[in-house]
Image (cartoon, rainbow, N blue to C red; front, side, top):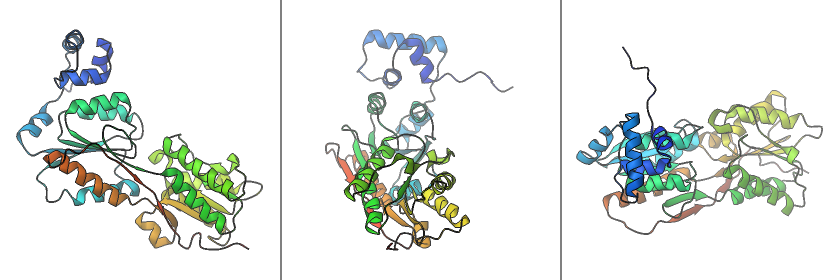
Length: 342
């Protein structure tokens, strides 16, 4: 008969011992940075709960090929696929095992910890997760090379984007095309990325002599892909088109949202770009074929640089101090916004 008892996790051990999960992780990895008293408390909790971490991955990593792990929120969005293409380019000729950790859209911290507790890896690329002090402690306790994409942390190689400047460039373009009623489609959940892109949107309006009106910022209700989806863009566009004074241009925080917004406009016989201009974000391959203006984040190039540097650290070819690499998105103007209003 199957065992229906809930699996004991590192969180249960930490709660029983009265310590942080990073402390439990250090004890499991035999790190010296734990006092003997705390180490004893953790071991007592482990014994009491009969906690047995899976060490098979650790054994394989020690006895076989080095293992590189990619922890990522999703494998299905065009943005993340572009990143992965860049990463995989430099893995084809390498004798290493590749593991994926699906962080999901919620409780990403928990997903990462549970993945790491299943065994050691030689290198880790962490995508789209803010590195708190607790997570930083867990990553350091692994004793592996680590790179972070999407956030910054002084202790690890970090690859990130200037979201303020990217949004500012997108909206400045719309202002230059004669638009004065410019909306914005954002994801529903607050995040550093959303806040910074709103800051860039506001800065461009103010520089163009236009007022900032938060009623012109809309989001959908669909939670798929954290709100960066076609469905969410479609829903948000519907809200903007119901305003008493319609918008004539919309800046979307992803190309997927822009595709959904475009469909919402087309269903109402609103022409793009003659009646409504659209600018997306990410510049995914599909956008180039349908004529969507977009902010190019060079995701594939970022993935390549992160992979090259991480592999150099894993092989011992590089022991440089952690680097911080900022990318500024570039505007790609296409048919969806290439129409100047009188």
